[in-house]
Length: 202
Length: 202
DNA sequence: TCGGCCACATGACGTCTGTCATGAAGGACT
DNA sequence: AGTCCTTCATGACAGACGTCATGTGGCCGA
View 1 (spheres, chains in turn cyan, purple, brown, blue):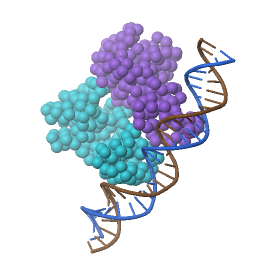
View 2 (cartoon, chains in turn purple, brown, orange, yellow; view 1 turned 30 degrees about the horizontal axis):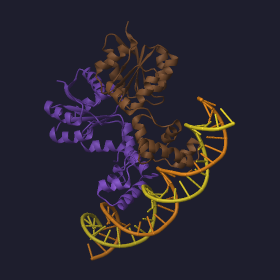
View 3 (spheres, chains in turn green, red, orange, brown; view 1 turned 90 degrees about the vertical axis):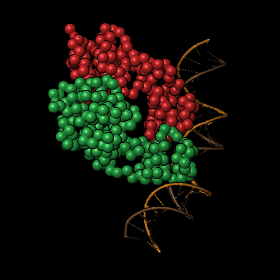
View 4 (tube, chains in turn green, purple, cyan, brown; view 1 turned 120 degrees about the vertical axis):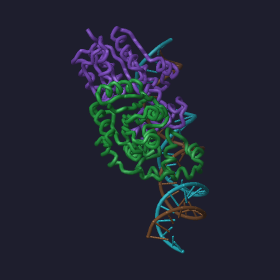
């Protein structure tokens, strides 16, 4: 009896390629595919899959969000997250959401198949490099408000706009940004935003 | 006699998956793989491949840069560019570099194989959506100096730093940035940078 | 109950940034 | 030779931004 797999990735080409690759393994079988987070959720439940292989970045809910809901909707289903851009913060969020496999897309095909088997057997596998990065990066030093405000300051947004969107006074926004900038050792809020984003903290 | 293909993508998992997928076609044969732009160049020449399938974003020279050099080093070799993030400007640059196939990774596997065949036969195929975006976006309104300076202003860099790196006076840098900001209708240089990046102009 | 941390706010400060006017030097076209 | 355009530069000005001091109120652990 082979392992029943759901494969979710928004890139059609990659998804079918990966599906064929997994199907080559005699003990693995891709029974469902999805291109968005919502589709992934629906398909996983509908086909009652054993393991869900999810891309981290997808339209709609991302891989981790899907994993979270899957833990509630389909307990017993193992989740493997695959990603191109491994940010330290993501790994932590993923692990907290019950994800048991976490791999960068730079790993070999054989590894992916092995990890699927391991996760299906109840085991766990996290890419060592990613884990090292996550440990080195540590936890976010930002308070939740600081993170909120920083997140809103993407791409040249004005303080006024941020204040309006966060329902805060402009002065308060500047204070939060200032402390975030200091904590992250950045030169300005754009730099701070980039850093926090790289770390997966926002 | 099957078409001899070079496949270049920095993501190992994707590369092997794609290789298997192309190898399934009886008339196509992946004879070389590469993970970086430099590797791609070397392997293409070494194996004298018929068609190079290149990921746009790779460490070292990107897909388009490789295509440019390939046009000189291995004339007669067709190039197909595959990309996750299709920015309008890239398509134009690619076409100017002699690329005859341009696809987003969201296309189907069958399309990729077809395009490889078409390009090998001397034909041309550009994804219609990407082409529409490129036409809508138009040409870059930036002068080359403006683009240079804007490119250096990524992620919260100081004007001083930009000036130092571009060997210009800080005042001049501000002038160029100011005119770039105006031309792009941006609120500040970070916004302008993001816009230009999205359009593929820098 | 007290001290400490966080969320939120105001005002003042100095610096950074974007804008504009202006000008010098060099190439290109007429 | 004269007129453009581009590149590079300077100086002035207003507004945006980052920092700091300071204050209020709420919540939590000691």
